[in-house]
Amino acid sequence: RLSPAPGPADPSADDGMTWWYRWLCRIAGVVGGMSCAFAGLWNCITINPLNIAAGVWMMLNAFVLFLCEAPFCCQFIEFANAVATRADKLRPWQKAAFYCGMAVFPVMLSLTLTTLFGNAVAFAAGVLYGLSALGKKGDAISYARIQQQKQMDEEKLTGAMEGQAL
Image 1 (spheres, rainbow, N blue to C red):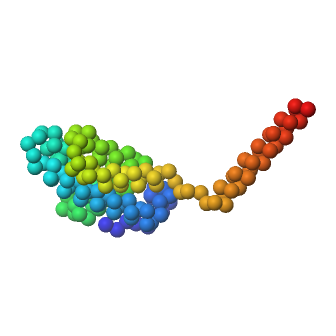
Image 2 (image 1 turned 90 degrees about the vertical axis):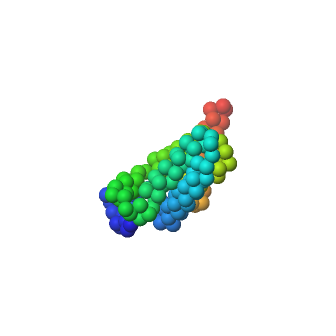
Image 3 (image 1 turned 180 degrees about the vertical axis):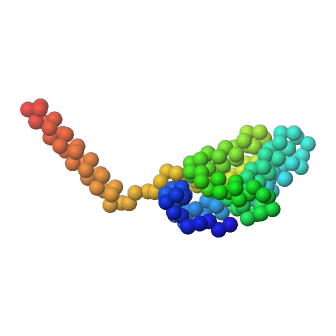
């Protein structure tokens, strides 16, 4: 799926993500989907009903991750592009909350190594989106200016306090 060039109407144009970080988040989502799919299938090979439920949920997570991050994998599903377009319009913090929430639920159902490791990469994709929602780190020059301004303000304040004390 080719995305159009970001324009003023495109909400992803102003989310502050660089192209490589956007691809890193997408790759983490796809790898998280594969991890959830394999671990979910492995989790279903048991007689414990909670493990089976967690495995089914993990495979559902994998489907949603593939649908949102790599819709070309689901090209035979009619609504795949519509869902992917809608997912691209979500803000990074919304994707972060959605992906992390999806990854935590199977772990709460059945706390096993399979569910932990299977959902870890999907949770990491949510964390990456969450970090992008925080914004870019400031540069050292602007940080030094802010610190210098604070120091000057404190010196003025202490000078005014000393003048009142006399």
